[in-house]
Length: 71
Image (cartoon, rainbow, N blue to C red; front, side):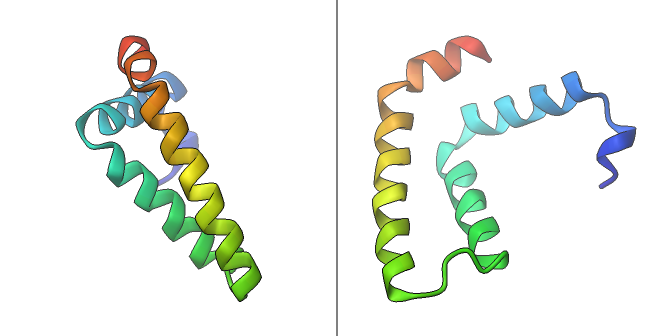
C-alpha cells in the first residue's frame, strides 16, 4: 500500500474502524511490527514487552469508551 496516495483522513478513519471492530487485531498488529523490526529479541526485552503489552491493554480497556466516541 502506498500511503502517499491515500488521504490521511481516510486512513485515519479506516484505522478507527478497525479499532472499533476488534481491538485485539490492533494490539496483535503492534506486536507483529515489534517482532518484525527485531525490537523484541532478548529475554529482558521479552519481559519488557510483556509489561508494555499489559500497560497498553490496561490503557485500551480504560479508554475504550473514549476511543469509540472519537471514532
